[in-house]
Image 1 (cartoon, rainbow, N blue to C red):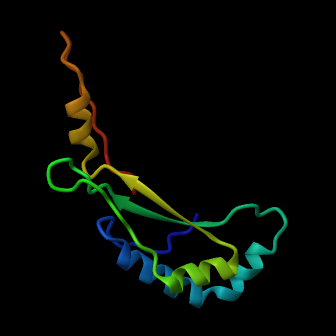
Image 2 (cartoon, rainbow, N blue to C red):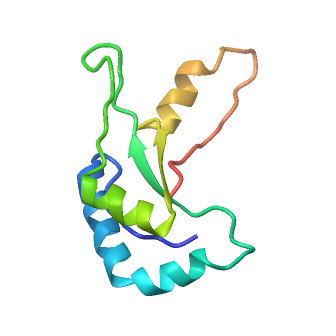
Length: 111
């Protein structure tokens, strides 16, 4: 796994721009990587915060610019979006059922 972008998870636009620059800069190396028979799957995974909250945001739509789609497609790369809750710890607290014992759990957003 290689980090193509260190952009924030709250927007896809910055991550997409970073990915375009990365694909352009490393096109020859990436083309060679794709030609190795043992390499079966290469994809760009974009991490995004889940914006749906049922009070203000009812749906989430994200867009890949044509330049990114073209560059990735030409190299045989797939595009993937991994969506994470904005606050994993808060989500865990809401789902935890009260019990006689106190439990302590700390969840952190994966980096």
